Image (cartoon, rainbow, N blue to C red; front, side):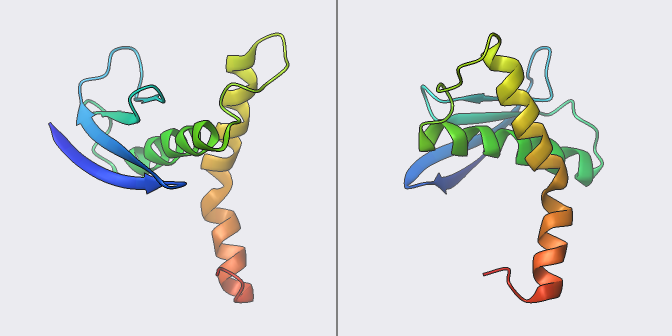
Amino acid sequence: MATQKVTILGSEWKIITKRVSNADGQCCAGIKQIWISNDIDTIATSRNRVLRHEILHAFMFESGLGYNFHATDVIDVNETMVDWFAIQYPKIKQVFVELGIEN
């Protein structure tokens, strides 16, 4: 089981690679841990995609948005937004780098 630490909006989170049931990853705001399944594809892009997704969940929790959706199904709204950002981030970053506005 591999463990890393990361600071997200001033709070320390642990990223733990371990067996995760029924998911490629999970984000637990209560104990500030992100779990990435060690069963995930060994392809780095797959692991990176899942890790970006879970880190975005952590950012939402730390910023107060993790629980503040007023929709019939909070989970679906949260997942849709997080997935969109996690999937589109590399493309957005590429545009920012091309324009010299990444910082």
